[in-house]
Amino acid sequence: MKLAALRLAAAAALLLGVLNAAAAEGDRLSASVGLDYTTGDYGQSEDTDMLALAFSVKYETGRWTYRASLPYIHVTGPSNVVVSDSGGVLVGPGTARTRTDHGLGDLVLGAAYVAMYGADAPFLLEVGGKVKLPTADEDKGLGTGETDWSIQADAFKQYGLYTPFATLGYRFYGDPPGINLRNVLYGSIGTTYRLADGNTVGAAYDFRDATVRGGDELSELSLFLTRKLTPSWQMQLYGVLGFSDASPDAGAGVVFTAIF
Image (cartoon, rainbow, N blue to C red):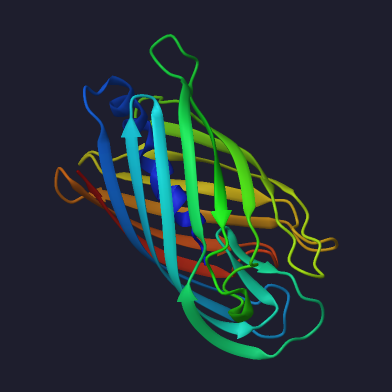
């Protein structure tokens, strides 16, 4: 499951959101629904296919932003490839049975603060953290059954039609019984480009340290198009290409966002 793709959707629009939230007289609420599909072998002999219908909300008030997301997941593949909000995580050794399971995923809650913005700032900076609560059924491999914590910073800078952005964070994993997951550094770097019609295209490269000793680091490229459908609705289409066993081989999805 590529829930990071929903973060990518937020990143594509975050520059506008930061400026609006910082200067707005009132608060702003937005809600998103996304359909995400990924497939990959994650170093196993069989592929794991994940389909997720993810719901998220974002509330902006002043320089603070609060987020929550919850997916419904359908997964087919080896039982030792366990779903995480950051993608498939291999936590079991050796070979495993093939299973097909579905159900709610993990609830992710986050808060962030616009620490630096304005004409005199060298770039826009948002800092915050998030927690993954183990609402998924670990017996089905829909989650690890443990609580994870993350802290991260997002930086943006507009240069005409281009808006480069970068993310750097650190995740503290809870360890399932008998498994030692490593705490990891993660991040992304990319840019958006505003088209003549006001829509945007962009690309981002995501990376993450290996979550298990001897495992691969996550390495993947995402391409996306964000289209404004109405003053209150936008749609994003994206594709994902992975370059390591910690990443899906390929993926695609669509996200619809409503601003209230």
